[in-house]
Image 1 (cartoon, one colour):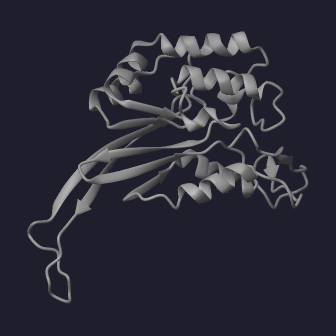
Image 2 (tube, rainbow, N blue to C red; image 1 turned 30 degrees about the vertical axis):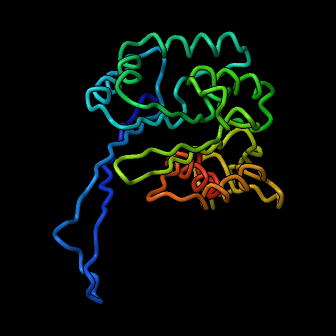
Image 3 (spheres, helix red, strand yellow; image 1 turned 180 degrees about the vertical axis):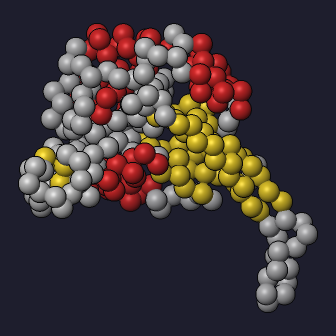
Length: 238
């Protein structure tokens, strides 16, 4: 799949003072703060990516790469690094990094192989390459556990938004292929019937529960991750 979309979200973070009336009507002193966040996924490092240039000109507060940020599809780590390097060499990618805070999660192709999960034999090596390429600080909690999940807080005025970045590959059990005679589910897969199968892994689930307890005015969970969890649990191919 080619780079298929960039979604612009302008979040109006409303702050208001309430009158002393029981109805607590919003007064004329209501103010708004805008935060611009953009998303993109499915970038082929061997093709032009003009939408990244368009995104850079918008100067968003943040840009989130949602996965398949390159098409690595390899068991050779030097090949994976080389493909990241081709993405890094693109001027439009460089311009975006200069104009916006950039965050990233991975999907299967930049994790290592099509549709693969926790049994990818080079997942630790791929994790290290990913964190280095996306310049995740050495002090980041994302480097202190297995998997590339983490969260970030963006502040605008007196309002904050928590960006939760999930890892939907490192811990995921294998997908279950449906038989050709099974018409209950579309495309290639069906729900995994094994009771202890997992998508995020126990440690990440516990982490997510703790993250949701942290104070924030808004929360944003990397949208492609939620789409995958929903679609693959229903047996759809993503």
